[in-house]
Length: 566
Image 1 (cartoon, rainbow, N blue to C red):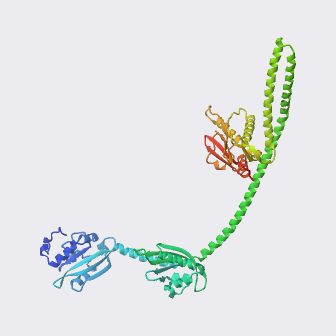
Image 2: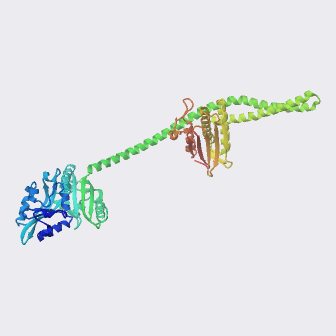
């Protein structure tokens, strides 16, 4: 407006303007509030930049210095009567949320609030001061809020949700909705009931808790609360469950000034939940009893399977061992007798002159035969020890538990497993590494059962290492089985490790399950590790775990408590 050439208008240069006009023009130029001035009979227009911004949709051509009647002819039907009212000296005009016509405000409706005030010179109205504000967004928000409130009231009626409001600025002044009154069984005149009336209606068992929650929330700093409690309805004396949800409005100091809330009758839901809870407890108890019966049945089944498996293995082992022992006795006996006879023969030869060459050859051959017979006798005793171990494993029952040197038991079992594997697999070759802790000492256990565990783990290790050599593309691969004992003080740890293919993480958690096996059909029953787990954990109170790296190794770790067990 400062850059506009006013000398070309009918008002002339600004220095020639009347004093009131110059005052109000300065006001326009020095305020950020949208303002417009119409001056003189032609209503010559003056306005600031703030007015230009809110009227940008209608100021499509220069308007400064033009006649207001001509420029706003499309809008004059709306504002003209108010302008004439002011110019005639009948006072100012105030319009709130005035809807601007679409052809003036553009394609989108606009709502303006404005005032028309007279500008006087010597008691005569010479112009109009327009102060305006675009309230389109605020007014639309108000309309939307009113629509939502109406919709909320309809929802409350449909959903039977009662609303309440408590004015906290001066006591507890209540206002209840009709739905609230219906839920609580109250008459219409109880819409402004007192706080004490509400407290008396609460069930005695819930009264202290419900009122305490309300007071703590109001006097605290929470934004609201939710509570469920019972009431006794005055209209029929029925006990009903109420779910209350509230929000608390606070001033800038945090003091509660207003509480709004919603109440719903949830009696049917609460009663259904209580019945469901009783039913769940009943069926949970039945499920526990059924689970216990199932566990007992499964334990019985496991014991039957284990007994049947061990009985079959025992019969087979005993039969083979007895068949071997008979000829082995003959070998050992005749070897021992032959040693004695050779000794007698050597004594007789000592009496014969040894000058002849034949006598020297006889002495030499006698010595060789004597050494051979000693080796036969030595290995025969070793074979006899293996057979005795086989017979030991073939005996039915667990036997008595007793203190046993764990290293000796493990060594005997390792020898038995090694010779058994070599007898069953032609070309069997696995390097056995013993790392037995000399301080391992004795452990109180069932020797026969633990021997079966070690025998199973060692046999599995032989199987894994041997098959990796068969499947390996590296001819230099050497199957290795490592047996290690570690003294842990109150326990002993036995580690059996093979350098086979290891166990996949996908099946690692299943290896102790009954009948689970990774061996081809006909080569495994899936009971060995399951039985071993039961023997170690259930019978001896120990632990059995596995560490493995697929394609690298597998190591079973058996930990047995050293002391006596029940």
